[in-house]
Length: 513
Image (cartoon, rainbow, N blue to C red; front, side, top):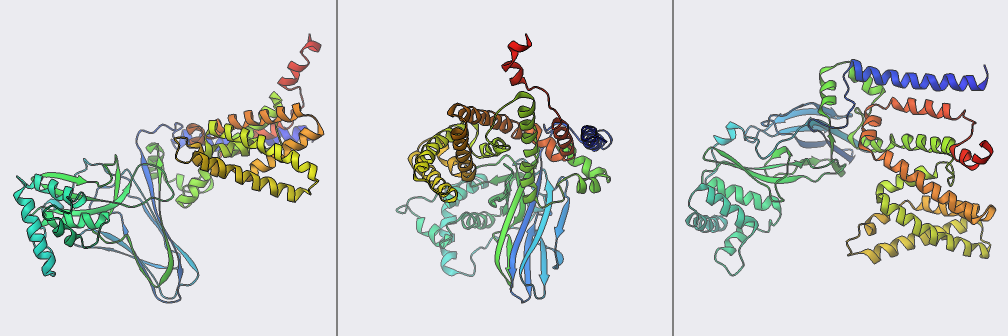
């Protein structure tokens, strides 16, 4: 069997295999093809990493609250060698995961994942909460605080007409206290007792509303706003007045949020460990249909393990969401070089430049690339006169690039140009190697050829960037990684093409005529 036939068979086999799995998932299992979502489903993960101290360890973590109706309440635990028990607090309905181990050592990891559509401000509070009996005698254990509370709460009651206006006044003065020279400012300061944070002020408002017979609680969770590897926990107030539910969000009302636990305590309580790193990650799935398929069809679990990333930790999934788009850019590069005849600096340098554009955006990336390459080339030709060896010469160029980036960032600090912030993320090594490659072409061939290859690299990088950042492409490559076989097969077939390129047809057009 000759090499041409062998390559053709291999390429077609890879394409057929990839398309076969793709068609099975879409036609038999009902996987959706569109990246457009009918609703948004969020993957939620609590990731704990810590060092054991060779002594009994106990880690208590609040889990998503049990008194809120959840959509897709799918939960998974990664326990490692730890024992796991679940507990529910009777009063708050908080749920806890309690991980224990006798003598842990070295670095350990615990993980909890769930899935939700979240809640909105219109989500009703549970009926049991509305009927709960509030604590009407706060600060009983501290005579000074009790006296300050009586004075301040009495003033609030005199200046309010009903429970609703009483709640509004309480929250306003807890978060926006009156000037120090005004009456009752000292009482508020005593009650806060240095707790100037959000939770301290929410707790003061909670106790004040409960003293008036208003069921109130502090809720803690995350805002469902964007996919992120590290999400900060948020805190807000929930209360019930005259048959109506209310929520107060100190940082502005979110569109959707996800309640994890209630009360002023921390999310994690741990003993017997060191160097605890808590990470909360969120990922939005913008097509609920694919999650429904995975829920109702048992055949998808094993298939997803082989042709999917959903069994990986959420932080790893977010990395692969970018990585699987790189073969798309490489395939485009192969097509443009083999059939169109684009000239580029190096083989895959344009794709690396396109990846860099993900951090800077296309226009900023083109501008930065052009400026830095021009200045870097000027330095490179100057260093040529000094006859430096390769490694020291590259080192000088790297240092020069860093200095340029720092100078541009400092110069644009305080301006409205986002380019000053994104420049620090531009890969230094890519810039340095591009400068070195372009200078070699300049010396060995001509300035025109070096400029032509530089412009060709920018054109290919721009096309690859637009493809790799397309939402539909990202969705298809992430949800259907079997398409990587199709791209591989296409590259194998294109690798056997030895005909004229489009640029060559144009170049020799007079001979054709």
